[in-house]
Length: 476
Length: 69
Image (cartoon, rainbow over the protein chains, first blue to last red):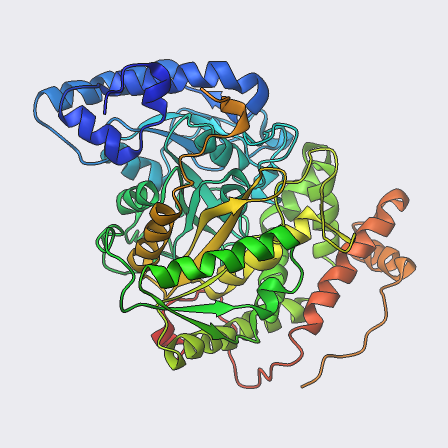
């Protein structure tokens, strides 16, 4: 393909850009310049960025170019611009975590482990993206959704998802404790991959709830997400929760159909309360997996509702341990929502938290049984019960007229997989009546990201909607 | 095990608990804080069906299923 204009460059996937760079048709600095130009053009509507390190990014891109010219190719991410959620440390830059309490925080001394790994893979850090305060929420103000700038991008990795959806960059770092990669990825119509708990180091990332926190890719396509996961995965002895698991090529099964795979459909908890558009899009997606060769079977997993409950309790109580002292010392530094949430959570009995930890053991056994009894490779469920809410009305409205706050609605289906620790990938499956994206989630066996990436990639390619452009980008 | 019957948490009880913990809740925030705690108790009812006798809580855990099976 010919990629000459700045706008064309922003449309390139990681794989496409890398191929053109190896051919010498484009240079890393071209890509980074195109990203910076797009930030300038869209940021007044998008509000996705906390800080853009334009000069540093261009310098790094020129260095990447020099390396390529000398024959040193670091791989698929060489010269690829990446966005970093602002709870992740970048050396020399403040990690403000979306909180006034950190307005004057010293710049980070070191890169987070995953930023180090991305740089070693040749990626170019563009800057820091907007997060909900300390990643504890699903709105990510002031960021907006490229599909409809009057609506939220979701959160807490909202700036990262908005930037990717607006084609500012093909990949971004998100973090996910109760859905914070998958929620904004789904609402913004891009791919979001929560890796298995422990797959990716959390060193240098501000915690929300240590026994649920994960970091992973938000990307324009499933292939891009897999390529990014390849760069950031791996055991980190300095992260106590990091799993000593061998590196696995997340793209190794990609390009194959789904013949021989078994995919379970879990309806109970996941379709109990969703909008009609979500239910319809989900049901219409299922035959696609069968057309691609998979056996699609209905399965029951009655523990899913409890998984969500245990996950939310653990999330809320562990967050108290992170923030309680800081809020006591500087209450004005925290937004009201998080301050009140902390006041509530600290009064919840520890017995409830301990029970949730025990239940997690039993729920993991239950989902392992479901997979083993049905010989499943993955299960598919809707990612969210609804689509992107208006920024001035933070509710999901269901077909019967009932309403649910986004903070409960958006986490209801996602948190389940934080509790189990399974890898979970959201892929855009269609649009609602307002043209807003609807995601479906493919959740797999622990440490088998390659399998769900194969399924998600095949589905994404078959549907062919991943290249549709958000409203913010116009029709050109 | 069946889900327990529970009654909604009362604001005055939350006010007393908060004061006793040394971190009183402002009157204008009391309803919201009470609602947030009440929501957690609601969630906890979904855990009542599990018999966790003999199960150790895992503070450092491993997502691999061979550990769970």
